[in-house]
Length: 338
Ligand code: EPU
Image (cartoon, rainbow, N blue to C red):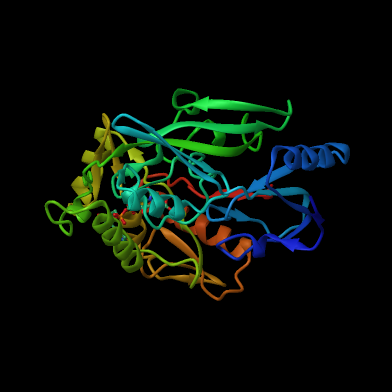
C-alpha cells in the first residue's frame, strides 16, 4: 500500500472540483485496508472512502485526513435454480456490472445502465433510474467495519433502503464501513420489466434485456449531462416528497405541475420546480444549472469552485421555497464543508 500526498479531490470527482487531500491510498485486499486504517488511526486522522467520486461535492479546503479508494473489481456468478447470485468487488464500475449481467441474460439491472460510479457506492444512496433501484435486486453486502477492524455482512433488511437512502448515509454510520463487495439476486432468462412511462414508449413488446440497455443508454445520453464532457454529479437534488394537501395547493396554482404517486404520499419533480422557477441553464460564477436537465448542477467553466456550486444550490433552494413553498433537499453529499 502506498500513501500518496499530492492528490486533490478535483482529480477524484466527476464534478472535477475539490481541494487538496493530505493522504490518499488505493487498497485492494483486506490486509491493505487494515494497513490504511491503522495508518489513519495512528495519526488520529479522519477517513473518507471514495468510489468514482460521482455523487459528492468536496469543498475547496484541504482535507486533513486519509482518503481511501478500494479497487478490487472481481465478479462472481453463482447459479441457483431460476436465480443467479452475482457478487462484484466494490471497485468494479457500476456499468461494467450491468453490461456483464445483461450479456448473460440476467434480469434486474438493465434499467440502471449507464449510471456512473462504482458498485460499492451504489447501495449507499440506493441508486435508481428508469423504474429500477438497487434495493429491488440487492441480496447482501460485505463491508469492513473501520472502528472494530472486522468484516461485517449486511442483509437487505439491515441496509434500510429508502429513496436515494440507506443506513450508510445516516450520521452514525457515515464513513464507518468500507464496502468490499455487493451481491445481487438476478433472474435467469428474465424478461425486461419496464415500468417507467417515458421508457415504455420507446421499448417495443418482446424487447430483449440488451435492447432495453441500449435504449436506456441512449435516453441518458440525450437527457443527462455526461460527466466525461462536463463536470457534474448527476441529480444534485432529490425529488421532494409532499402530502395530499400540498399536492392540491400546488396544483391549484400550477395546473402543469409534475406530481407522481409515491406510496401514500407524492413526489414532485424537482427538475420541474427548478425549471419553472426559471433556473434551467442559468450560470452563476463558474457553476450553472444544466440547460439539458434542471436537476443537474454543472461545473460550466471547468474552473468552478465548490463554493460556486454550493452558492448556486442555495440560491435555487431558496427561490424554489419562495415560489412553491417546497423544500429541496440535496441528493449529493457535501464533503469537508462546515
Ligand atoms: N423535467 C423538467 N425539466 C427538466 C427535466 C425534467 O420539467 O429539465 C420533468 C420531466 O418532464 C419529467 C420529470 O421532470 O416529467 C421527471 O424527469 P426525469 O424522468 O428526468 O426524472 P427525474 O425525477 O428528474 C430521476 C433521478 C435520476 C434518474 C431519472 C430517470 C432523482 C433525484 N433523480 O430524475 O437519477 O436518472 O429519474 O429515472 O431521483 C441521479 O440520481 O443522479 C440521477 C440522474
